[in-house]
Image (cartoon, rainbow, N blue to C red):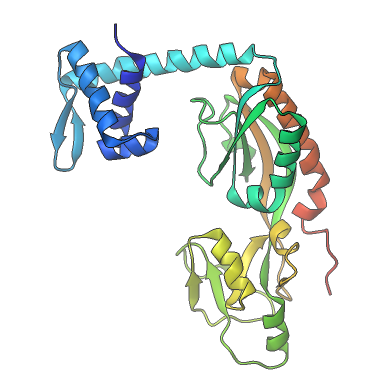
Length: 298
């Protein structure tokens, strides 16, 4: 009999192209992956990989194994989601994925409330900007910013929430100094290298055109608080920060709408239904904050 766990390790190496990357993806050590692949090769009496300087390449036998392994994985996921869908108890593991800003600056108090309301539901919060594969059960619920609903996969069930807007922010003290005539350069703070953003050309305050880049979103906020320059932030982050203020003369920009996404049989479970209904109500209450309408401006 072939061990399905051995097949999972084989699939990870085949998809990642290296044992190290497969180990990181599976959350195990390097030797475990090698041992599992060796067990599969022993059971099948073939070599499934050829080790090259650039990584691991499938042998011809490995190509055949891959075809059947994909089918095994699909069947396993189908079985799991159907059984999971019949689970109507308010207990067990619930995995939720959402962007870091939404987790840390908006919804964490609500997630804590839900956890207190349902002590038998084990919460796993995947705070990441990467899109989880709901079909493969990498998460049970995804909260995502969607710019075009037509891009949503057809196999996902989506519940549309409020629209999310962003503004251009800078330090309140730095703005006061600029109004007083300070000549210190004001940079634009970004998290990528995609050139001068449109918002940096807007408004009354002009930047030097020299960027201040940090790939970390929290560092981006702190840089703005410290008066480095101006940056674009979701309104629910910038408006709630007493150290920041919107740059005069700049407009709000819509990121998209917040969607609660679930998949197939998974959405029928009681814990998923309880969570989506709960978060949907909380997001609706946050609509003015998300739209940048919660504070008055000069």
